[in-house]
Amino acid sequence: MTVKKPKVEIDTSTEEKIKNAARTVFYKKGYAAARTRDIAEEAGINLALLNYYFRSKEKLFNIIMTETLSGFIQRMIVVLNDETTTLEKKTELIASKYIDLIIKEPEVPTFIISEIRNNPDMLLEKIPLKEIVNKSIFFKQHQKALEGNESIESNPLQFLMNLMGLIVFPFIAKPLIMGISGINTEAFNQMMLERKKMIPVWIKTIMKTK
Amino acid sequence: MTVKKPKVEIDTSTEEKIKNAARTVFYKKGYAAARTRDIAEEAGINLALLNYYFRSKEKLFNIIMTETLSGFIQRMIVVLNDETTTLEKKTELIASKYIDLIIKEPEVPTFIISEIRNNPDMLLEKIPLKEIVNKSIFFKQHQKALEGNESIESNPLQFLMNLMGLIVFPFIAKPLIMGISGINTEAFNQMMLERKKMIPVWIKTIMKTK
DNA sequence: GTCTATAGGGGGATAGAC
DNA sequence: GTCTATCCCCCTATAGAC
Image (cartoon, rainbow over all chains, first blue to last red; front, side, top):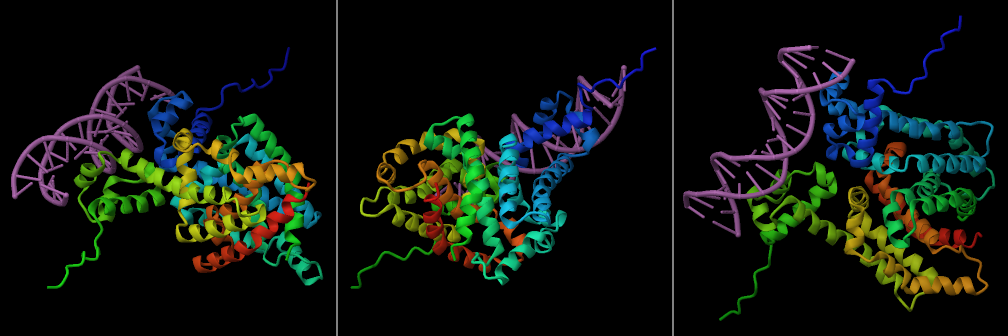
């Protein structure tokens, strides 16, 4: 008698289907322009089901937003709090992880930025960013470097802005960049992979320029 | 008999009032979330007048968008095509002009990015970005530098992405940055003014890192 | 759980008086 | 040119059958 293995889930649950569809539509259009009808159609279900599972467009959106944000920020927290890596290695890891992530989900940065604009407090209510950064291993390492004789930019915020700007900005400006250069998405991604190697080098040289 | 001077225009024309209000509301909320009623109220006029002057929300938006974009990009074109300045001086001018501009109009970068996402073609229809950049003095100077022995990043796109990323990204991520650091807008702007000095130095060192 | 049908409200646009 | 009043469509949300 053969043991009956659990059937491989080809179709995900309805709830998951709706969430996936919501992600797609919200990422592309933003909250205000997204229609629940779009989401229902994308999910291949009826509009009423959306409200059955999630009560309202807004509640569904909040779930997607929260998951997206924490997924995005969690990746940085892990790196910033790694005791076994140097500052240099941390920039390398962050650049590498984020560029790979954003190549897979290119709409996320613009989505986050657009939506936070409409509700800046949401972010801070959900995630204690200030504490996270200020209590991080990264922050302590940066202070140690300052206290020592190392020449380094004194403001850790400038450090993080430079790093994230070099990583994220090209993806945000992708339509402009593709318009200027005429390259396609594949070539664009190739450029981003080149940046993955260069950004840690650049950051290293930048941050020693007092 | 005293010559009657043209009266100082304290109140601008109705058309201009509506446009100013539209800029304010569209910049803050984006096209989809902005309501024509908001704009009318902001302008201190009746909703019907908005349609009387501009026919539709969409037409009004297109006017604002076109003016914003060309104003934003024109500033770069002027610098990129200046025959009298070196590459180095150009980075200095661009950083300086844009940081000053965005401090005055901090919502513009996020506005442009959010709206272009919904209609990437609009931008390219209105402005021949590719020609502008490729035929610019900047582009020729960059090629000259490559042909000579100067060690310089070979891709002018990477150059522009780094420059604009270092300039614009902090403004885009401003809600995050203020959340992390707890600083207010004034202190934030002060940091941006510090960057104004640093960015040309950073770019110079970055771009020589092959 | 999933559907069809519809209520309910908001927002863009216009008619028509002044 | 500017206003009030109103139309009407579209979108979210729900009632109710299956």
